[in-house]
Length: 328
Image 1: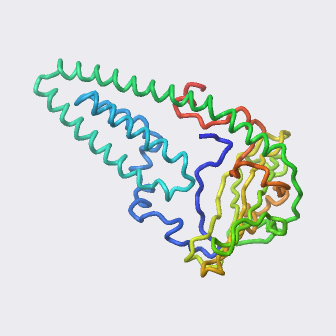
Image 2 (image 1 turned 30 degrees about the vertical axis):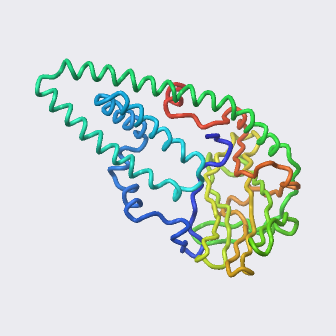
Image 3 (image 1 turned 90 degrees about the horizontal axis):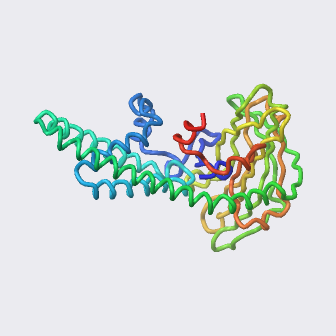
């Protein structure tokens, strides 16, 4: 997944403190499971746990390991095309089931070891290790090929973003609760209308937000929420998105976040209304954020949320944990 293109989005609680369950809430059991000490203890260990599970499955049959590896690869790749946690939370259950299966298989191998079948276990382990190594090699080659194909295309799109014409916005700073300020701007006066009465009237535009490290103080990260207001939470039209923006080193170019913004009006068909109203940032950070509106967003083939740091062209994809470890 590209680090400069959208990260998986996090729906946030509207200013009223309520959120439509159908839009953003996750099952209570999953929420508790994610916040439990047991789950936090295994944070970051998922790939290694799954590799161990596939290894144990391979000790039963090499073909079982191949099938398990392919399924896990599909499940691991699927979240890359989704944008919110609510779309992928269900995959935690197969992972937990796989861990339970691995524990069961491990206990079976311990029983065979106690029965004196150490020679047979050694042969199965070697065979399974070879199978897992082949699967890892296959995935690695596939990822490299995908990067070779995708990086030039992603770079071309993001270069068109970086070189686009911008019109400055003059937002109004509105103090909010909990130490935040909203940079409010009406951006739909010149937005592009899309759709009709049957589908609901939609306007779209592209916002650019510059985060300047020199004006943000001694900070490396800044929380920002691209805020929507909806007429009725029942219609689940709150598209607000919370981001943690990495700031470029002081003296360098500002971090620029491109954000497609929409105004949706379904009132004529019995639905609700929702529109982008501004950017919420911590109080005291107003001077380090500047807002712009893209002059011709319709010229882009695709509107994506993109975070462009000063060195964005050097990291067009998200590196796997093993790659990060090897680079240290």
